[in-house]
Image (cartoon, rainbow, N blue to C red; front, side, top):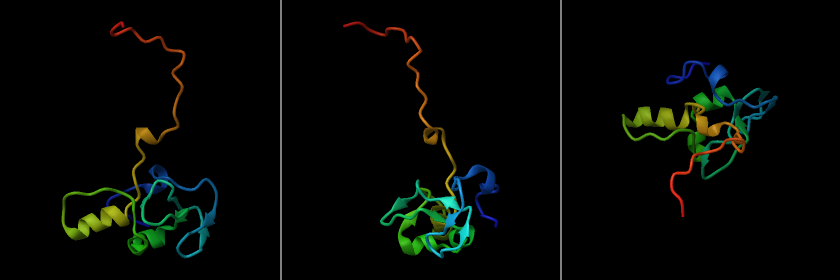
Length: 106
C-alpha cells in the first residue's frame, strides 16, 4: 500500500509485534499499532486498507497534527498517514552512571 506522505511505513512506522485483528475490519495481519494515536476513541491497531480509506475519521482518531495546507492535505496527514517515530518514543535509558557538573550550589 502507498501512503501519499510516507514513502516506507513498513520499515519506519509503528507496527504490531505480532499479527492481530484490525480494530476496524477484523482482518488479521501485521498492522499499524494505534497505541500512539489520539482522539475520542481508542483502538489497538489498524490495517493498511482501513488506514488509507480514512476509517479513522469516523472514529475521531488522529495520527498527526497539521496546521497548514489545504483541507484535503490536512485530512490526509491527520487521518490517513502513519506517524513517524521520534526520539521521544524510544524506551527511556537510565543515565544513573553519569556524573553531571554542578551548575550552581545552594
